[in-house]
Length: 415
Ligand code: NI
Image (cartoon, rainbow, N blue to C red; front, side):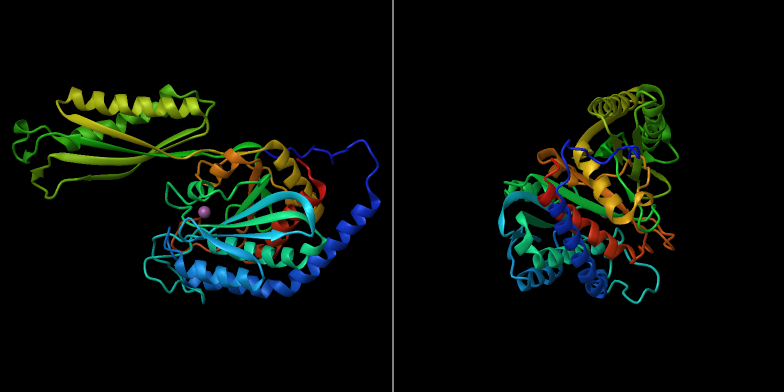
């Protein structure tokens, strides 16, 4: 949670006046340039919105960004099939910081009549990743314009497949993109927050998001003669009910955990008791012991309940994205930069959320922070809703924040 009492860092020596003046001048240049760039950022976002592509199919998206980054004179290379990495090299030696945007859309049919509605059937940018790409392109252009005044390097990561585990982040890391990177920042435009508000949490901010499947095997037969069957629908129903005791009776009430079923599949006709029923669901947690206990109890309840009814249960548990753990120093740094840019009121006290995010993998390797950037004004539909939209007025401000995080990190070397 944001500690609003955190004081500006006092390093015990006089602030370097020249350095601050130079920084203020840079900020001024960025703001002027950003005003000119804002219509372009919105246009990029709308173009991506009209041409959504789901996980590892971001081919057109990749091409558009590739051409743009090449046009800036940057060295660009494809990564993780449909992702891209580009590096901006400053005039002097220095630190290396990475900024990341995710690229994929969701497999759903967009609702509503916005002028930039999806042109691809069955795909929609319903989570604002279109905005994330536009923000990072804007930051790329602003930073490239200033590279002669900068020390160090900025690595721009356009990452595919955030929405579908195992996701694009792990592959990007596997291809060596984080080599030499000393800090990383990423953001999510966030509908639950008012436009312009910035929320982040020290430590665990987003959850371990795991997936489980329970296959209940009984013995099918005629619906009129249940005594000749072992009914897997009844057993599956008992399992769903019994599992509710995991969070209420097994997990420490002060430690967050969610167990939810998402699908129940079984049967073909009203008068046939089927052979098997398949249940699928998700477990969300922040701590390793909670995660392990939920998995263990799910298995015990599934297998034990099935056995009690003469059926059998096959249990599979897949660990998904780990929890997003923000580095405390990186959070302090984001708060300080945001405060300087937008004032104290821009910071919002928030709780961690049970959603998952593969930015977690980067944070396992490199200190950094993931933050929510409010974009919810006049946007009533939540993320992943078919009519989701966000407030585009957040785009220039979020671009300014990402740009400033990179520049301030290189100039001030806060951690
Ligand atoms: Ni998202």
